[in-house]
Length: 287
Image (cartoon, rainbow, N blue to C red; front, side):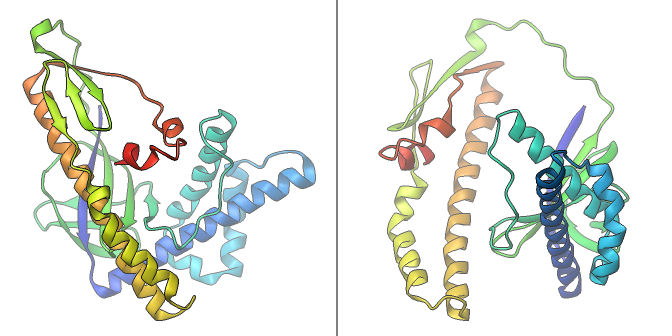
């Protein structure tokens, strides 16, 4: 069974530079691979596979020597991401793949393999980077699979690790109706349970709207490309990040409470992506 774990990283200044270099280089290779896919199809009417793209990476590195300072498997992982993006597009799950921007609040790069975790020293060793300090809120056992290093708008670094623990999935067992709970998600109330309990919506976005408008106005007044505008955008991004963290914390605590008190949970399937197209309710639905 594959499990996912996420830990906070505390790199030194030099290590942060290396992590940022990996992020920028992987973004560069992703955009290059996407451009190659588009141009190849326009010129030949055929697609170019990620394996053929990987064969071109050495040539790309020769003309961009700074790519040689980055883990080659992380670079190859970007061609896989491009191929996955096209697969989702052709299956109708997402829109046409877009180029990555350094302005995105969350930046990341993959670490397919050859990394290690040391619980005794509280460090994680990534290819081409010295061991980085980490905070392990829980330990795990099993085979390390792929990992992803991400950087938030606050400049915090995290690593998400997939681990194969070798265990089988739990066998489904019969459960009593008394230990089953149904959930009806709403707008006025966050959710109404089948036992009649109503869970109040904390409305983190609505409560922060006044502050958001102030920060957005400050960004619009700053000159484009200036340091003051960059600082204003950073403050705005930090507030958005705070709202996201508040939502995640609330939902995680609620979900833990529900699964601790019940053996089965029934929840309706909602097309949230379609629902938020209603501009009159989009904000309330998102909140």
